[in-house]
Image 1 (cartoon, rainbow, N blue to C red):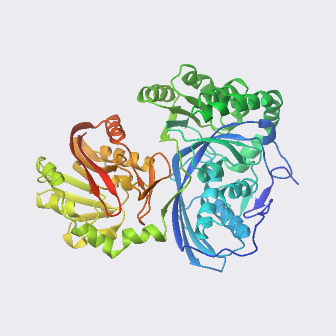
Image 2 (spheres, rainbow, N blue to C red):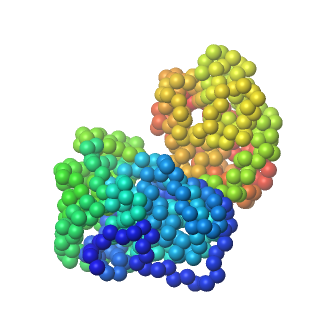
Image 3 (cartoon, helix red, strand yellow):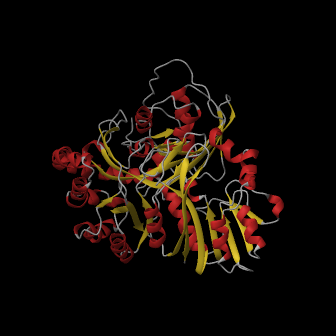
Length: 565
């Protein structure tokens, strides 16, 4: 067999060994998930990155899960029929096709599905694991449709040992075989944000870790297709082999006796040292220089971020050319940004993701938001006097006001009656009273389709905690800052984690599942909320109100603030 051959989409090198001959049945007819991308800090044994006939690659890997998501929507058109319809807006169709066919073969099913994938313009072949995450996200969605009959640890191994990437943007039927260690599947199917993989895509350590992440890559970087990249990589594999032969025993010792004990005690300090040494002192970055001509110039200049303690962790991701840092405070972030900007690098800001993929929409929570009774309930609820009294203190007559997550539109109507020019926005138009003749748009609070600096007042009442991730929560606050005029005001009312009752199940540091058939929530502390808004540039005018309320099944702490841009 030719090394790293071109294969048909859906080609299986390593079959999935089913534990039962009973075919799974559909549990859902549609689903929407957000699947996190990954950063690959290092290969533990680069010698094992080289070609082998089994297509099972065992170098091990240090993975950082990233709150930058691929969103997948899958709808069942027919339980049988085997027809795959991929939306016209989906970019990497061959990867979607490959994932669909792999899952059909693993499960022994042939549904007709419509699949849409939005990768939010995540750069491909740059270090984000976008190819493997795309395949894994579609596969996880299909697994969910059938009630997850394939355990996550088995799905990781199956996908890693049958990996491929697109040859170019126009070929929707063929893939180039590319080594896969399993990071892109592991991070989205594992609940912790820092993960060490060894052997056959097997997780041996994982740690929940709260940190901001800055990723940077050259502004003039031109994305190459997988065929071109693998031809270049094959010419340079001897370098990977040489590094492995020289350093793999030292790396393994340091992982076992330094990094792993540190992680058990909640620290990544030793792991960061091992990764930095491998990347910057053992030749790893130089081995990857075929991806971008000036990669070593960046490497030589960016290493000072770690050496001067401007960050807690620094690495090239995969073969690059993206570098990334983990930072714990604003001073570190500022220093890192300054260096990255001087190097003419594009910067993407995110944070560590400590959960596996998130189910955003399925039959269960879709019913709640789109049911007639839900809309009627929210439309008929009384206004909170502490909100209306605060609105009354602001001159809004003939001023532009936006009600973000307007629900039934109660506060939109109040704003309009006060003489404001009102825009109501909600993700679910079924909630809104469209007879009110108030301008309404359907949109998410983290992607508000209005221009910068255009509103005098923004209100978000009892909404932002309905984010599906901490990233969405923070981005929603950033959107409010973006759309407000200078000196504009925002009134934000949100649940916090100061009261947690038995109807909530905590799944990570910020995410809580509601056991009363409502969607999950992101709950931060009051201090976190205030820290985030002030870091973004808001001035805290006042804490308007704080009280505990019963939402039917459990109590919530309601925290309301007035802030100014």
